Image (cartoon, rainbow, N blue to C red; front, side, top):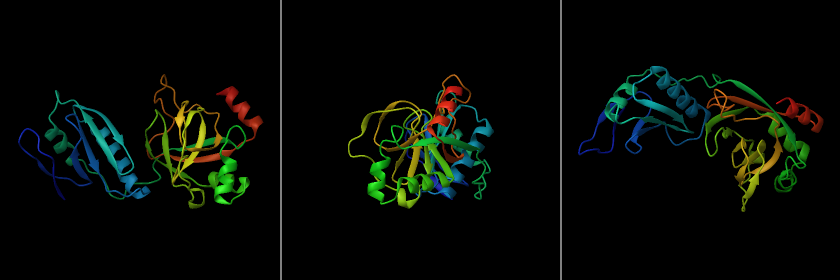
Length: 243
């Protein structure tokens, strides 16, 4: 496949690449697109490419950030030109049959409903499911971490069961407690920090999902697999006290 980059300094660059389409993102970053579809297969290619680029240790690259169907490569333009970054990345061998189970497995204990999940009752009314049925559906699936964004450590987890897919709240909350487990459209997520938010809150985890002093600071990484585990209020308190 051959692609053309946008013009910079009066010239453009053609390169052959083996796993995606390059485009410019300002003067210190490139985006590599793998399509427009939000799917585990596409995201597996994104994650595999991100790992391969990081492992290549290309001089000048400062960060590689995967998203749903693309990844951004940030570099220092005072160290290396964008054309050299493209040429180096284009030579990396990334297999299309990326292993979608390659990520770590993360178990998340969750206290559903009540003060921990103030929107659960509303979700039951809008879906026609019982609270028990919602918890069973939400906790029985294994989710895929597509990307991190919005907040440090905030992971977009898919794919939510179609029976649970509801739009965001019309009026976002000004305060969502850290650890809140939420759903919106085809994804579920956990707020790692207290913040405003418009997702529907159905539970809360006692785990701390982001710690800037830890290495790595975030519990989740793109490509990880996640399963939610219902716990009682007593279990929640015990885990929180030991966290």
